[in-house]
Length: 392
Image (cartoon, rainbow, N blue to C red):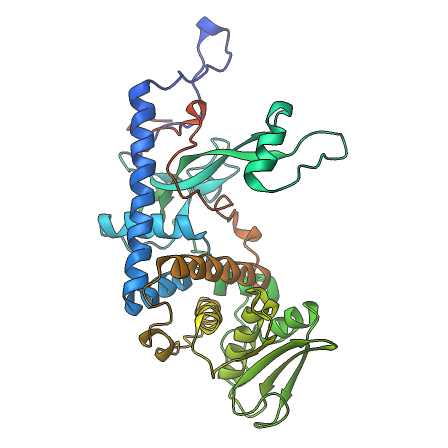
């Protein structure tokens, strides 16, 4: 059945000689509505973080969702989409922009259209512009960053504000006639198959590790400057831990027990990589034992490992004792910092092991939205969020 949609491009008319019309400037009422919506979105995020700080189960549910979505979104957009989906009673599979009219991006690139009357899911997007000369000193004082010019002597592009962009879930779309309904959600597992096997299903040698990422994880550890090796239990730095990462003067190594199953081995290797990527080895002690300490760093590393492994098809049930023992003691800022680190590092690792590029999956805008709901530039208000029933 054909679906009616609204064109995202601006209309042309004979009266203006075929020139593209400018969108009318937003009214004060529209600007105020946008500010209120951004404030509400920020409040939703803070409320979710507060629940995560107070209840360990909330943290576990959060990382499960991050894993299910393949660590595709930044923390702010992850929570924003989770909140909207819960309110609508939607179990999302894939979000994507409507796409350019010529079919070069978004759902249109995949021969799908957004059905009439569907309301978009909002995500944070930065408003970027080039820094002006008269703003340079104030910008450096506010951010503590020294402004440097590019090769052409120009000042850098900065995030000047925030706006909402819209994204649509797979269930809100339908195939464009005459194309068939053959869209496959680009899960991390599918992306991995495209990268390594050219789209063919991997043949597992022993059935114990479904991810096929172990060698690449070891390569990432090596690229970070760490010597990786399997070792006998109780040897060297390893002790009774499943794995250990050591960073000290003249020593940078990762050791994993050689008697672990293939599945546990890859999970432990990802855990140790997470310690490195999270910056835990920058701590003065320089030594992190992988399964013995149940503090902040272990929660971060274990959460990253769970997200990455589950995204690749290995459900490595996370250690729950780290959470029920109250690792954050209800501290909202600790949880917020940990959540931001976990999401950022997990998506970084996932992207390196299974690039998004083949699926037109541009990651959502970076960096994270600000703590406040201000800074949305008046001339960058997002378009309406509902697709009208007008044929293209």
